[in-house]
Image (cartoon, rainbow, N blue to C red; front, side, top):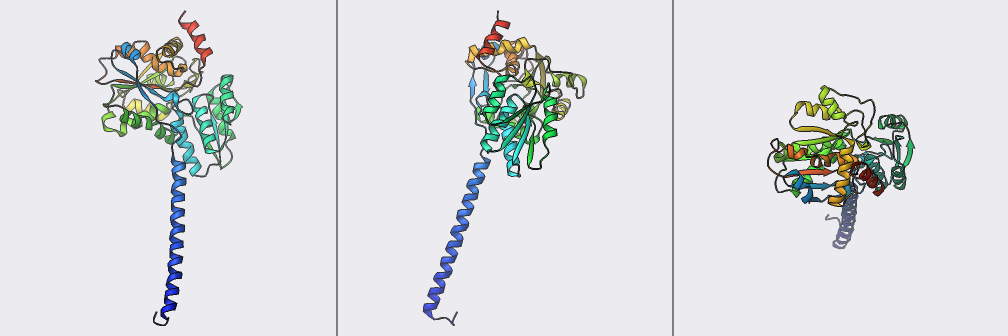
Length: 358
């Protein structure tokens, strides 16, 4: 340093300081740009849904009943919680497009998520999918392929089409990341309730929502002893059939109107959980008539349209089941998960009303 004159030192110092300031400012800008990008990517695709007290259901149940309105999610059902999370993670890991299978709530969640993530989605659906659901999927930008008479056959077609390493296969219910996304529902309920409930009532098809709810319950101390009441319809009762047999059972066909519950076999993880903790999960089934009647009554009581899969869950109150379970339940309110309402419209409600209320 002694070699340089005072003026040269001043100039050199200024250059070094300027270079350092530029490097720091460039790093700082890049750092916050990356943070902003991650925040945008990590922002959930689902919303926090309302928990509403229902006077009508409370009177029928003989205790306070709260309804968790998952039907107001961007995709129309809870499915966006888990499927949205799974698809976001897939994009982070390099996925450029998606393949999936479902003509119901899971399909809508995939379509809405793919649109928000600006990724291509090809979705395989069974022939039982209602025409207005096909139009809904297409309206979200999904490429729709009709394949097979039930979801299992459509899923096999989707698996066969998943050939590119850049394509991610989205399962409607049987992915651990999807269960983790669904578990957020319990964390929301924990914030919204002053005390743990006596039970949580939900419908069950393949078992994705049930797995997420159980995962959330197991992670929060005051929820560990809260039972989960799972409702199915006759003809779509793969969980109850498996529990009765003590092993996985594949239904010969889905014969229920509640096509959103239309998995021929339940997720093996859910069955194993039920076998290990039989009192934690309480399984019941109702008829299609019960499910449709509950949809009609709920439309009157709460001014909300829901589909028969959700009607199966609501039947726990409308058929008097919850009231009969008073001795089995602890203190606290009942929480009903209003899972979703994509496969419903005014015309269907009117038709069900004529069928079950005449």
